[in-house]
Image 1 (cartoon, rainbow over the protein chains, first blue to last red):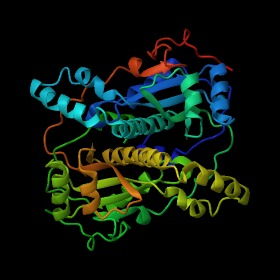
Image 2 (image 1 turned 90 degrees about the vertical axis):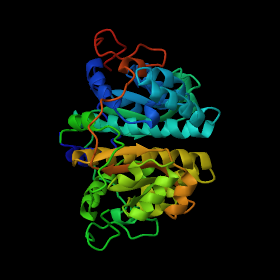
Image 3 (image 1 turned 180 degrees about the vertical axis):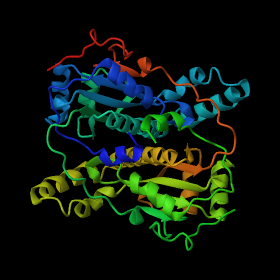
Image 4 (image 1 turned 45 degrees about the vertical axis):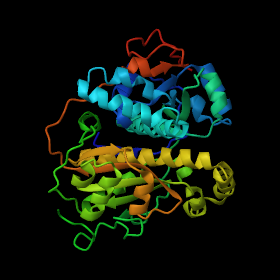
Length: 217
Length: 217
């Protein structure tokens, strides 16, 4: 599907047909794309737990204050951020030219080691980039998706047996939409959220090509 | 362009042709899609500063330890996370049915107010979802992109006159690639990063449809 159509079609779906299932092969096709998402230093600070088991989904629903999409979806995918992804650098840069390795490995270590806030920021940032790819890839294949942060992260960590190096960043529930589509919810105008050159610069309105701060070098 | 082709084409580009420019109209088309990205409670915790001014790009390059893509790109877009986006809830839910407003507004307030870590996590999460849409939308229109976190956030905040409610989440530089494409960098196998049902469950390999924990309800 054309990307622009995907962007228009995707919205956060809350009601799913509990009869619909998704296969390993379908999931694999999705994740083959997800792992191509960018990440800082290519450290791929993400891990996914794809939950299809009915009993586990029921437990996750409890941990999500009873939200039924957690149980009715075809798969509930916990997108985790990996706090210690920087430790994978030697593996990731194994095939890189020697000069690159010697430059990157100490830089990466210095960027993350002993810096819990940097680790957390990065885990959320990279995992969220991957989550967006997952939603678009799923929409492209006809699935409805819903990102969710409304859950008890500690309860979820226990249910899914997370290790302490992983933090839940969001769930993506995925399945077939049951109810009729609802209209898209309100968005702030582009002009209000995009500023030109500095935050106090003009808003982007798309009709100011000759008057903006647009300078050819 | 088909989404799957976009995913394959997109990779992080570091060398840009400094002669290429981007117009307001082209930026507007991109951001019309970016703002359709999902966010928690639809709070749209993002603000963008699109920098095309040569002098400012040169200053940003200094703040990014001399990385030339900051200056050579057609536009350097700072993706900011908005810590106080929850304060926009009354505006965002203004047109929602009264029952929804009464339920959502206190819930949102309770979720964020006085919780700086939750505000920061959310700002990074939502801004990153939007950043991924920006990269795919740009790739779809033939632009090369590069996400960047290697910069001094305080220097950038000063140069771009950020207010204290905004945190820099990443830059996306955007332009025309100058050097020849390089091969895609290493990715962890899907089987290593996607676990089925629990973190200690089997890795997803796509060839286990009948043996996995896949249960029809």
